[in-house]
Amino acid sequence: MRLFRRPGFITISILLIIYLIIGIMGQYGYASAVLGNAMDTMMYIGWALALAIIMSYAGYVSFGHAVFVGLGAWMTALVVMNIMGTQPFTPTMFVFSLVLAAAASALLAFAVGFVVLRLRGAYFAIATIGLDYVILYLAVYMLRRAGIAPPLLFRNLNLTIQDFYWMHFIVFAITVIVAYLAKVSRFGLGLAAIREDEEAAEVMGVDTFRYKLLAFTLSALLAGMWGAPLAFRQAKFDPYDYFSLLNSVIMIVENTVGGLGSFLGPIIGSYIYYALYWTLLTKIAQASFVVLGPLIVAIIALAPEGLVGWLRRRFPRLRGALE
Amino acid sequence: MPDVILRGEGIVKRFGGLVAVDNVSFQVKRGEIFGIIGPNGAGKTTLFNVISGVYKPEAGRVYYEGRDITPLSPHERARLGIARTHQVVKPFSGLTVLENIAVGALFGTRYGKIEVEEALEIAREVAEFVGLASKVDLPASALNVQEKKRLELARALASEPKVLLLDEVLAGLTPSEIGDMLGLLRKVREERGVTIVMVEHIMHAIMNLADRMMVLHFGRKIAEGTPEEIANNPDVITVYLGDPSLALKFVKRRGGA
Image (cartoon, rainbow over all chains, first blue to last red):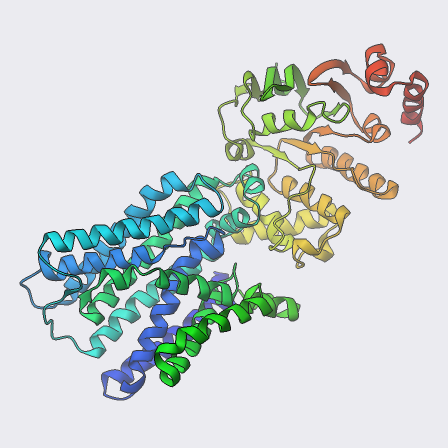
C-alpha cells in the first residue's frame, strides 16, 4: 500500500520513534528531566488531533471538547476508586479505564451529536459549551452526594513517572494513527467535502449527517481516552480543572495556529503552543496567560490560515509534503 | 416504459405563498439531451433541486429508472446515478482540483466499491477529459470561472452518473468558451452515454444541443417538444420569446451552427 510512503506516515514514525527513545531512556534513569515535558507535549498533540477530526477535518468547532477529557478522567476515577477500588494497580486497571473512558465519551457524543449536528455553524459550538457545563456540574453533584468535596484524590497506586509516561505513549500512538487514518481515508475526503461545502457534498453522495456524527463520536472517543493518563498522572479527579473551558480553548488554539484541514497542523500548533506556554511559565509564571493570549492573537492575525496553510501558500511545491 | 429514465409527476413546490413549481410533469428518455428553459424565476432551478433531492416537493413524485425516489435524500440519489452541477459553482475551494473530482468518484455510483487511490486515478482521467489536466494540483480556488464550470462538470462526471443535471453551465462564459463547452457536452453524451437534463438561458446554445425541451413560466409547464416545435409554439413566443421573428432566427441558426 502506498500509505507507507506518504509524508504523514513518516511524520508519525518519527514522532513515535522519538517518544519511544525518550521513554526507554527514562526507563533507565536518563532523560528524567524531560519526561514531564514529553508527556505534556504528547497530551497536547493528542488533544489537538482528537478535536481536529471534527473541527479541522469536518469544519465543525466543538467549543467544549474538554468535556470528553473530563468524562474520561471521571470514568478513570470510577475504576480506580470504586469498580477496582481495592485492587493494586495492574495494566488491566489502566486498559479498563481507557476502554470505559472511550466508551462513555463516544456514547455521549453520539447521543448529543444526533440532536445538535442537525444544526449548522455556531449552534453546534454553543451546544458543546453547554454540554461541558452540564457534565461538570453533574460530576460535582455526584461527588458531593458521595460525601466528597472536589477534587477526588486517588488512593496511592505506587506508580512511577515511567508508568505515567508509557500510559501517555500508548494513548498518543493510538491517537496519531487513528487521526491520520481518518484523514487519508474515504471518510477523511468526505469530511473535507463537508467542511468546504456541505450542500455540495450531500448532492455529490456524501452522507453528511452520518459522517458528521461519526466524526464527532470518534473525536470524542479519542479525547475521552486522554482523560485516563491525565487522571492517573495527577492522581485525582478534579472536575473544575478537567472540564475547564480553558482546556477546550487550548485545543482550538492548537488547531488554529497550526492550520486547519491538515494532519500536520494540529501537531505543529501544539508544539508552538507548548513552547510558548512553557517558556513563559518558567519566566513569568502566573502572568504567562496575559502574554500568551495576545501572542496567539498576533499569530492568528499574521497567518489566519495557520502555519501549515501559510507554508502551503508560500511554498506551493511543498503542498504535497504538508499533509 | 423502459426508455424513460427520469420522470416527474405533478410536482409542486411552494415557498410560503409562492408556488415555485406548479404541477409539473415531464419524461426524459434514456440517452437524450433534455432542455429546460424559461424566464428568470420560472422555477427551473427549484425543479432541479426537487429532482436531486435538495427540496422535498409538497406534491408529486419523481421516478428514476421506474423507481419512486421521492423519499430519498440527495446523497442516496447521487449514489443511484443522478449527478448535478450548480448554477452558482460550489467548488471545494480548499481542496485541489484532483481531490474535488475524486470526491465525485468516491461517493458516486461506485460508492463503496473503490478506494481513495482509485478515485484519484479516475479523477485524473476525468480531468483530462474536461481539459483540466494541467490544473489538477492547484487548489480549486485558483481556477477562473470557466475552469470552475468545468470542475463542476468533472465532479459530476467522475461519479459515473446515468443522468446529469446541468444548471446553467454556459452562463458567464465567452462565446468561444460556450463553443468548447457544447463540444464537451456532446462528447459526454456520445462517449459516456449519459442522459443530460439542462437548464439554460443561452437560447441558441440549448436550441442547438437539445433533442427535446420544455418551457416553464411562473412555475408551470407551458410547452414541450423539439426545439423547432418550441420555437414555433405560439404560447412560447408570446410569453417567453416575445418576438416571433426572433424565434425563427433561432431555428435557422440551428442548421448552421
